[in-house]
Length: 593
Image 1 (cartoon, one colour):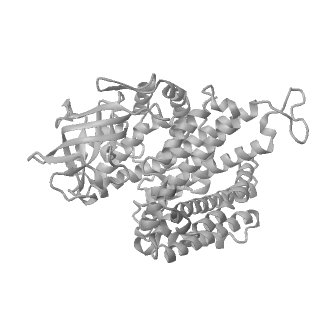
Image 2 (spheres, rainbow, N blue to C red):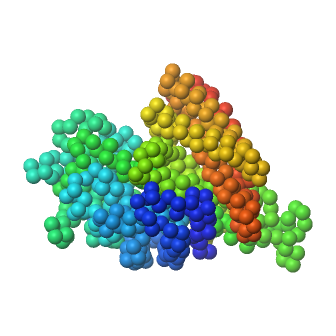
């Protein structure tokens, strides 16, 4: 089957739930009209469905190849990327100052859901460029930005982030790549970086690497790291590409999934680099890139789940096996389609509830990214707080649920899904990495409880609780969505109880916070879903009350009801588990495992 971008669903969230066209004053762009939004969704969907989706399987089968330092991408991939650049899809949310279209991030994230679902591996090439672009834009000198960003904005050049080394992943304080001052304001970068997505390919004339390295003589650990811009090719002041820099791809990883993306081992040998920001501020500057990547990874995980769900629905309607428990539904055929069976319905409904809730959660978060730049200081501060708080939740919860949905998709396919004839296997393999890279989901949970919750005296979480309380109070008398409001209120109360437990027990014994972190994050994710599902239910019910007979709205409520009644009760289990503390985890001696 062919992937179909969910234009109708995202249009509903953007217009009826988030009402983006009313927020143009905060975007700094008065042109965010309903017509423009709909045009972007429609055209983005055509490109994703018609150009990217058809090459997804090709990328999985052919993979990337490396010969003499040159990486060749799968058949059709280079051409698809060139079409993406020519159509302007790589430049949607970049600043017009550097050649971008200056549209809100929320629109870029909407189209990003289409492209990542069409081919997760393909979407990583422009995705990494966006992260590098924003890192340079936020911290680079005016000279660096003027020279490198315009062609990154158009997609003519791509970008990467280089953090991991053979001896260090999460613990970046162990980075050994060194930077030696050349005496002219540049640095000689030497070292090896591994697992560098899109580190080398045949899409673009140049690749701009953002590289974490330690200036010679800097203090050990995180505080001694700096961030550098290191291009594949040198470029003169006129923008003409010159000789090769001292950076080379010396190996490609053989991976479980995302085969179409080149995951490279990069060797730097006295490569000329330029400092991004100040010396010793590398990790602070890299977090701009990492946070962008984490949001993109959450989107990617959910989008893969979306594609897997769509394929599972088609299979369930086509596959004939057994008879419905209540009597034949396909009496003229040898058997009924498996979608008649309650347990198959359970898997599809669970997938649908997670996918549709996740789509809206992504767009709500992208809206906060845009509101951070509002001229209204109160709006900007609140959005900034929410971005810090929500990013680890979105990354971890959506990738976990995306993989779960991909697994359910394979289960719906039965034995057929375990073969390569169907794409269920590819989706499961592709989705698994999203739970690991850009900071494992366990690291996201530790970041949430250790850094984001206590930040600024807990201002972000208290504000978020206040927003939920206001929504519950405002809609308490709305009988039509009573179950949503009550479910949200109950989930919020459980999350608040878990938060208080962490405050009381985490400081007394840090292991308590670590032991509770994963369950706390999942409790947070379920509460966030309850909040966005309640908002969608309110919007859908309002349409029905206004006389709109489109079955889309009734179906939205039916899906939301499944989430409230069959998924949200898991919140109670997460609260119970997180309150058990560290003792049950730490009591067993290491030698006894």
